[in-house]
Length: 160
Image (cartoon, rainbow, N blue to C red):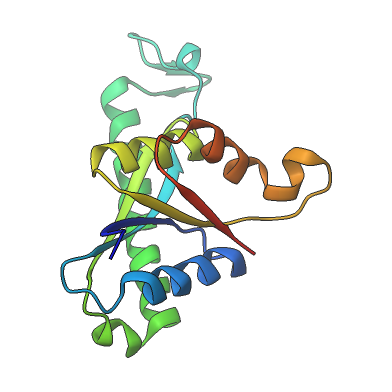
């Protein structure tokens, strides 16, 4: 098989679900393959100017440690929700997949950064992702799909 390490960015949309099913069709029967199902959570929820050494955020003090703790909590909740969602979508089919399935959450400044960095960090050889039609040229693929296509060093297959 040409591809052995496939990344599926996942946001629960119909397009993402179609991408997941296609990834399973591509490599699901190969016990030497890995399917990475990843959601990206923004780690840019507060501008750096609002986090100070003194820890002032309006009337509520927040310091870097508290901010990191908040991000970790958000990522953990997102990871649980992703696992529940994948379990609901695939059900018993998850047990039938021979490929290794990795379910993960990535904190990143943007979905594009999270997806492309995850692919590089895990040496993925293909990204299969959903797309959304929003109108003009960039919108035909969706802004995240478009950004990944432009930024990725590996093949990207978009699914409608």
